[in-house]
Length: 117
Image 1 (tube, rainbow, N blue to C red):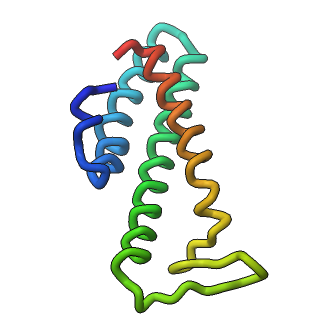
Image 2: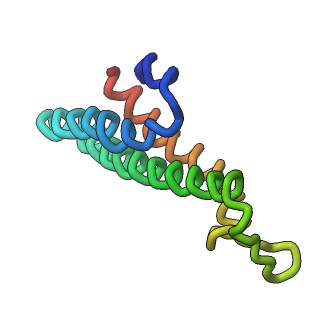
């Protein structure tokens, strides 16, 4: 990936994912289509979808963190034993975020490596 992306604020990453990363992956998909590399084309399509999903997850998790850190007036709702929600985001959903992010990063990285950009 690009060195400058590792140095930018986390809040900027969803925009980078949905613009620059998707643009580069889509360009690679078009090149793969031209040479008939259907596997790489599919891999790039999956990576574009993964980049968009990861950006969405990053926005949702950031918004949830902001609520938790800066809005004590928004109450935690306890449901079914040890389960709870904050601002309609359940703890089970939040627990899945790291694994989802890891899987989507794998899709993006796999295609990126193949494109050699």
